[in-house]
Image 1 (tube, rainbow, N blue to C red):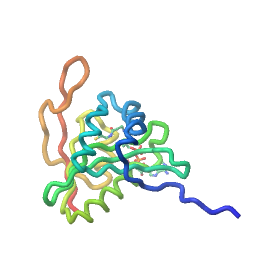
Image 2: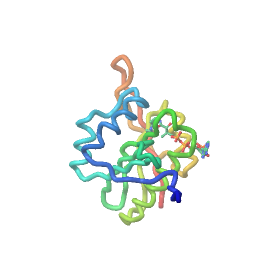
Image 3: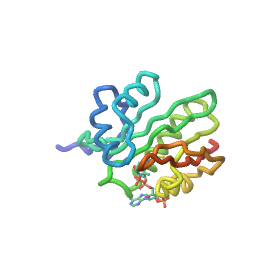
Image 4: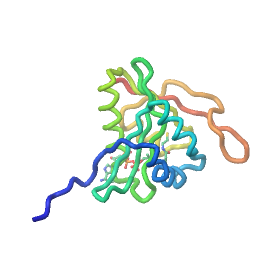
Length: 154
Ligand SMILES: CC(C)(COP(=O)(O)OP(=O)(O)OC[C@H]1O[C@@H](n2cnc3c(N)ncnc32)[C@H](O)[C@@H]1OP(=O)(O)O)[C@@H](O)C(=O)NCCC(=O)NCCS
């Protein structure tokens, strides 16, 4: 008799999952976080949540940090070959559930001004621009790129 497995599930990621996370990170970002960035984030107690399929393959993840009544989304990524299937939306739903558990009243994030796909996903989810940070991100050929700061009230 076969038992039906849920197609996706969330899992808490640990130090020994960093290789799996880096595989996606380096695939989808021109300026990826380093192993040290992820290790520091884990050591700091940030929330690192993975989305896996029934075979335990990692499909995406988010990292978030709680400061008082605000949750800050630090990173969100979906494996390149699994994008456009609603997985970011599933991760955002899980982020909202985490933020509510933390009794947060809003979620904040920064996104590159040129990351139109991510901006669109966030806008459709209910985030709105509340400001800009000049030259916040490193960009190609030693230039810098502005960040849009977005917030969603819970
Ligand atoms: C930005 C990113 C996380 C979006 O991931 P994604 O999984 O492709 O996003 P989703 O598919 O969940 O996007 C949701 C969209 O898919 C649609 N969708 C939902 N279910 C779907 C399905 N079964 N099939 C196709 N589309 C679907 C939703 O309607 C939604 O559309 P909308 O954006 O018009 O509202 C992804 O492109 C990525 O990892 N980019 C690189 C890293 C990055 O830039 N991260 C953000 C840093 S701030």
